[in-house]
Structure formats: C-alpha cells, structure tokens
Amino acid sequence: MTDVELRHLAAMNAIAEEGSFGRAAARLGYTQSTVSQQIAALEKAVGGPVFDRPGGPKPVRITPLGSVVLDQGRELLAKGQALSDAVDRFQAGDGRIDIGTFQSVSNVILPSVVSRLRDEFPNCDIRLSEEEPDQPQIGDLDLLFYDGPIDGDVEHVKLFDDPYLLVAAAGTFPEGAVSLEQLDNQPMVAWPLTCDQPGMEQALARGGARPRVVFRTAVNDTLLSMVRAGLGSAALPRLAIRGADVASDSRLRIHELRPPVPPRTIYLHWRAGRTHSPLARRAIEIAIEVATELALPPANA
Image (cartoon, rainbow, N blue to C red; front, side, top):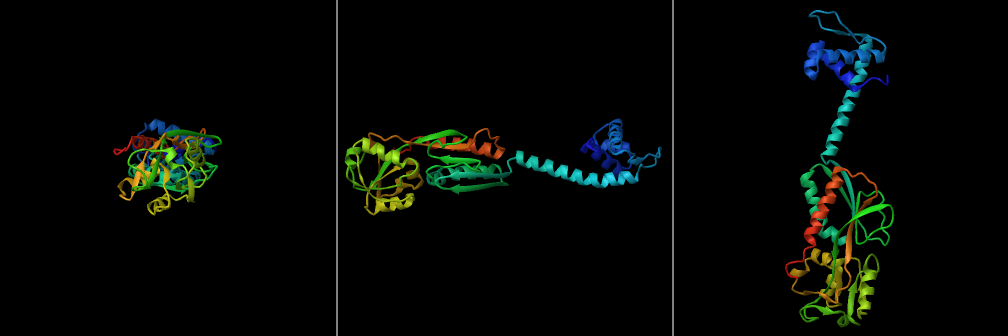
C-alpha cells in the first residue's frame, strides 16, 4: 500500500464521479492513457481491480474493492487538500510569530512593524512579550529585540546605535549641550542597574560625572514625571525620549551630553540556523527599514 499516491486516488475519484476514463481525463487535464496508467498502478498497489469496464458507451462501475479504496481515498484527498491549503496560507504569511521586546522598542519600533505586518498579512497572529532581564534568553521566541548582543546559539542584526541624551526640567541648565562635569553631585533619576544602564553610568563617571541617583524605576514615563516634578534630571536613550514625545513638552528640555557617552546598541536576535517563516522573514525586513528611518537625526537635533 505504500505505492498508492494521491494522484492515483484523484484519478479514481474523478472516474467515479464522471463515469468514464475519457471525461475524467478531460477534467483532470490529463490524456486518457495517463489516467489509465494511474488506475493500473493503483490496482497493482491494492491487489485487485477497482473498476469494472463494460466497454462501449456504458459507464464504468466501481468494484467492491474499489468502494473500500475510494471511501478511504476521499478522506486522504481531503487531508491532502487541507495540507495544500495550509501550506499556501503559510507561504502567504499566515501563521503565528512570537516577538520579545522592551519598553522603548515597544513604544517606537514595534507599532510600525505590527501595523505593516497586519496590512500585508491580515490573518497573521502576532504575539508580543515585554521584559528587560539581565540575561535575556530567546527561548521559544521567533525574534527578540534587545539593547546588546545576547549569549547562546543566536544570530542577530544590528539595527542602530541609540545615543544617550539628558532630559531636565526647563531652566535647570542653559540651552545647548551639558558637560558631564555639570552633572557631578547633581540629583538624577535613573533606570535600575540592568541592561545597558551600568555601562552608561560608568561612562558618566569616567567623564567626571558622579550624580546622586535619588530614584530608580524601569518605567520611562515615571522617570520623566519625576524630572517634571524637579526631583532630578535623567540620562535616557534617544529612542526612549522619542517614544515619550519629550520634545513637545514645554516643561522639559533635551540636552546633548559633552563629551557624549557611548550609545547603547539595538539588536534584533533569532535562533542560529533557524529557517524563518515568511512572516518572520518579513518582520525582520520591516524592523530594519523602520530602524533605518529612526536612525536619522531628529529635525530639532
């Protein structure tokens, strides 16, 4: 029975429905001899005739063995069609994609990625998870955004460098760049010491700035609320500042740092050697396109 093929069953089904080899061949787009060959191969595989052939204008008749084969064969044909449909939908971008992200990427990059994916693949299933662990793991995710390379058997593409800027309440510093020395012993609100934050604070110290961190939180909106309240200034990546639309807030000012501290770097990761689905492949392409646009200096910089 291992020699039975779906094409043999399709030919048999067409003959049973059309009543003749000739009409079945026309329906399937084959020659009559090709259909006859397929039925001969099927009969050899099942060990007996599946049609009685009375000859002349009389329709062919299915045999008892043929009834058994056709009954089961139609189920296989339906499953084969379902498989073909599922593959077509997959190749068209349907299916599920799981993406790991973090706060500022969620605010600025992912909305564009998700919107464009849904426009191009209306039936796709996009699942997002947001966290900022010290040691991220890609696990079962298809894609993972993170501000740095991660350990493990992964590959990545660098999206862009994200420079640090200073956000302060209006009037705290003169307009223009702020030197690192001006931040020495000044109150600041800051992220917890995870991800790129320790490296950024070490860079401030090397530049002569040892600010007094008076409050830490992982929520950018909360940090900015404390800056507005006058608790202290904050050194934040440009992506976080952009996501919070700080430039439109008259209570806040954005200052470049002099000398600049090393930027954090945003990467998109996936498991090494992974064959991407069309949906994941397109998500990577869109993320790169969006990141390229975001890497351009803002108009007011």
